[in-house]
Amino acid sequence: MNPHPRTRILITAALALALAHPSPAAADQPPVLPPASAPVGVPAPGPRTDGPYVPQPIVPGGVIIPLYPPDSPYLKRDRLAEPEEYHYYEPERVGYVIHIHNPSIEFHPGNRQLNTGSVVILAAGGAHRTLNVGGEGADEVNYFYNYGVSTVILRNRLRSDGYDPQIDGVNDALQAIKLVRAHAKEWNLDPRRIGIMGFSAGAELAAAATLQWADFDARNDLPSNPLAKVSSRPDFAGIIYPGPSPFARGVPPAIPRDMPPAFITCAGWGDWIHAVWATEYFTALLNDGVPNVEMHIYARGHHPGDKVGPGEPPSTGGITDRGFIAFGAWQDRFMDWFRDLGFLGKPGVETQAAIDVAANLNRVKKSASWSPPKTVPPAQAPTAPAKGP
Image (cartoon, rainbow, N blue to C red; front, side):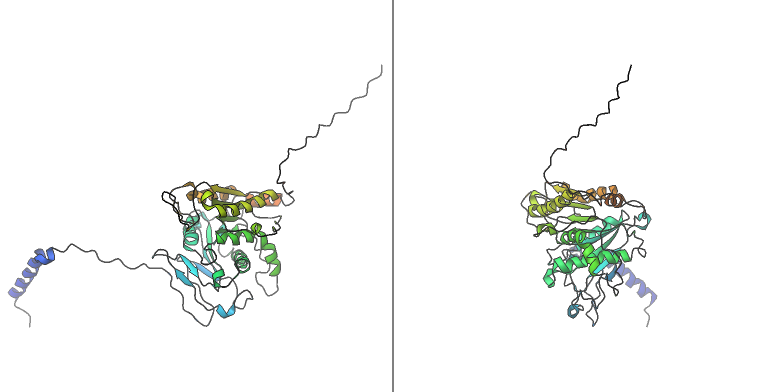
């Protein structure tokens, strides 16, 4: 039964009075904000099925393609269905990946209005135990986007899962270059502007790719391979605080005549051994006369994850500012180099890098010990015969 209208008025007034004058106990409680929602968009491992594992995107919107068909001899088929594991340094994004048995690439286009046709394949570090795709993958996707440069996050196999980085990891890097070049038209890329940037352990793969691509292409030139005639040669390389290059392992490898240009950077005193490896790679290319090789060794800085003392810059990686030291701006020096070589120009136009490679195919190896050039006296003009009387 509905209450009398006068009763309803009295009830409403009482509620209004209670809200306007809360009880003493309620008045003593400070106002509380509602709880924030949990982070969204962080990938969880995909389900295990009878088929090959389907990798989850590191950055939302990524186009993921496995590197190899499921029956490839490069894969361990008995482990192909095992899910990857995604781990976090911060709760809102992936820090690193492990248990990669179905290696893949994840494509992200650059700003389409600024499209240069250039693409950087990102090979993260992690000492071949983990793949640090957060600071050495996801961050760089957004950075290069603003220059009209597309990016690809490489998910290569790791030593910690029973793979050999010098074989399986390098194969993954070279196959990634092939696969990206095969999709160049579909992704609005210039097939002559495809390069690789490696960090730490990933730089080992990038350095090897610049040297071993021709052998990889020859081994995979098979009638059954749809990528048989697609080159795995990188058009440029970024070697960032690298692990040991092939020049640090016994007999130095042959340097291709069409060796791509390379940008190399590392901290010096605070990251001594990686600086030595960076210098070995640089010196080998410099002595061979490879054009457009640039190196920056910075006075201050540390390798990512190293312990640092009081007052020292933080040992962060990737493109972080590292406490606003000069090493924290290496990526700007890379973009200067990248621009100088023509990779930020309009797609379809031959880059300065390509012009210089073609002009130096017959270069002469430089001498490690400098000596002044020999001077040749100018030829004397013939003396005119004396005229007779």
